[in-house]
Length: 83
Image 1 (cartoon, rainbow, N blue to C red):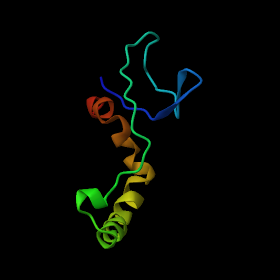
Image 2 (image 1 turned 90 degrees about the horizontal axis):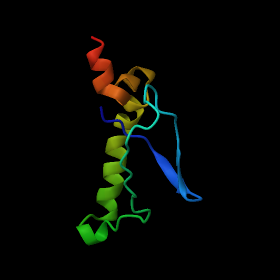
Image 3 (image 1 turned 45 degrees about the vertical axis):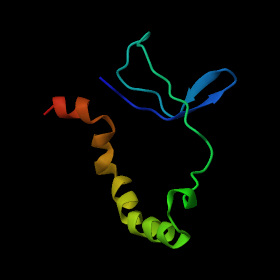
Image 4 (image 1 turned 90 degrees about the vertical axis):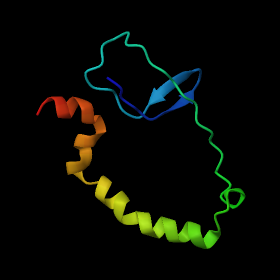
């Protein structure tokens, strides 16, 4: 089983935004540290106009994924196995 959780590094440890469900004590984990700097879109050939267009275009998707019914995809493999 793979499960991804969001968190932050603080005081020498990882603080998770949520407690994982059905995970046994001592389960191995892999921690990946993400760059906290913003992406330079200009260096990637993306203009401010394109950025604004993309943000507006993707807003409906964000609203869709925020719906309660979409929570099933948070742990898709476990939920699929219950079918």
